[in-house]
Image (cartoon, rainbow, N blue to C red; front, side, top):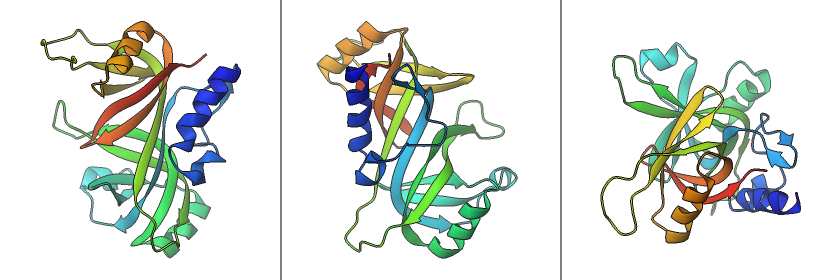
Length: 208
């Protein structure tokens, strides 16, 4: 159990000091020393109210956060405290906690866009603060068949989280790929980057 707790703490610390002493989202629960299945995101960037496509507006999504050269949609639900905070932080640098999901674009079979379901927000007052994003993904790992002969191999797969499926690729690090093969089919915890709307696994460990 100590090993699992240390691994989980390490994944949280790399996201920044703000998250190191808090849970990543309200949905994070401890199960036998591990973290409950989910895709938990912690992000610091500029929050903007922008016109969004009608199908997103129908879901109450009318915000984006700019981080690492990307724009990610953000939904705040009907939480009154979050709504009150929003009135004070528009077009400012903020920190968000929540869960990450990928929404299907109506009329398209494949294309999806990332959206953060936020449950915590606060303004960043440090003028020298930089934007960053960190994601912890916990679910059952299913690797795809390997295609090609590149060295190291390009490995992809899926994290199954309840009824949701998160497509991922793996950083081309030999030890990481060996670890992925060893953990295939198990419930694992991964530290993940979001690169051009693609989830890229950087570290991986079994979630006992």
